[in-house]
Amino acid sequence: MSPQIIFFDTKSNWYAKALELRYKILREPLGLEFTEEELMKDEADVHVCAQMGDKVVACLTLTNGGDNTLKIRQVAVDTEHQSKGFGKLLNDAAEEYAVKNGYVELNCHARKTAVPFYQKQGYRVVGDEFTEVTIPHCKMKKSLYEQK
Ligand SMILES: CC(C)(COP(=O)(O)OP(=O)(O)OC[C@H]1O[C@@H](n2cnc3c(N)ncnc32)[C@H](O)[C@@H]1OP(=O)(O)O)[C@@H](O)C(=O)NCCC(=O)NCCS
Image (cartoon, rainbow, N blue to C red):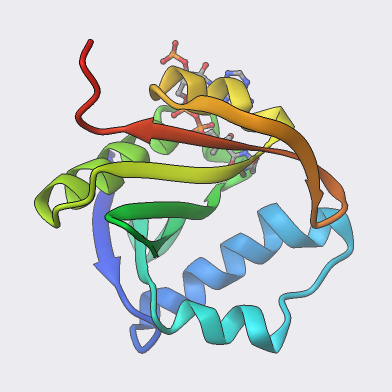
């Protein structure tokens, strides 16, 4: 079964399921909870998930970063569905959304362990490594209209 891509906001039932997955994959292993401030930030964002049956198997969140840039954050693929192309599928959906909505750049704060994944999607590291949610991260970006 191949997953369906769904775009939604925080009022949707999909949001609660995506948040559960984000917690399981991104926060629980670090012993961290989402803060109220972080959850409030979600309200202005566009959320995307890959859904199979009634389950969210992968998700990400898109934040308008200003200057026609779009930040990809909270990228999570459920453990048993990793390495099946779902992360790429979601990134492709984000990229299509960015192009349709006039953005010129995608960027993210990538966990160091996920940098090779983003490099495969055409992102490059910019600047120095830094710590976020207690672990090493790199800022990465992908220009959508760069001359090849
Ligand atoms: C990182 C993550 C989003 C990648 O999604 P995924 O569905 O597992 O990856 P895909 O199957 O779409 O992989 C696409 C390509 O990237 C490569 N890739 C994926 N994760 C990788 C990793 N951690 N290191 C090296 N390569 C990786 C795959 O081999 C594949 O390569 P190919 O196109 O040559 O076949 C996912 O594994 C995940 O949620 N990990 C845990 C949470 C996390 O780190 N989130 C990112 C926070 S910034």
